[in-house]
Length: 246
Image (cartoon, rainbow, N blue to C red; front, side):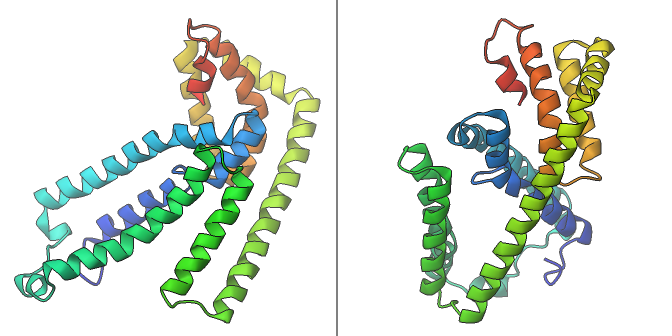
């Protein structure tokens, strides 16, 4: 984007905002961890995250379109020469080449889960096979790249496991020493009602996000917030209110 003279603020904002969608739009490792901690179905959490993810991404796209329409200099359009250099057929082919394989990958992973054909772990294997096949189809496969992928996977998995162990130990000690009851009584004592309580929990998560990785946040806050959400759900006539809160 900088190469084509896009606004630095718009370019960096779009990249940072779009980066937050990775752990929301399925398949998401965060939702898998949340399902494990809350004893809910991974497939249901995936299904529940699709619409919010599409809404959020649509808002991002809408903002960029409106901003570039109001300030064309922030996102300069292609020149007439650049448009004439590529035919409509070439554009259609480039779009198909860029979009169809990722769509097949997404459908292969999520479709197998939603259809009840595979568990999330098995669906991850399906995704790995499809990704490998696409790498071969694009002619990008190298043994060096395969080694890098395997090494990075091992590093990431080890990091996640270490964080899970540390967060579990912290949560166990914190809850065992009565810290969970203190937090619950503090939130209940504010007396802001169901949605006020929800806002307080979101503020706490926002502040924790400045210092702690999302895995640690889930491991620490879920044992505290889930009982509060369930109790908040009892205030409403809807039996699924606690699920709406999370």
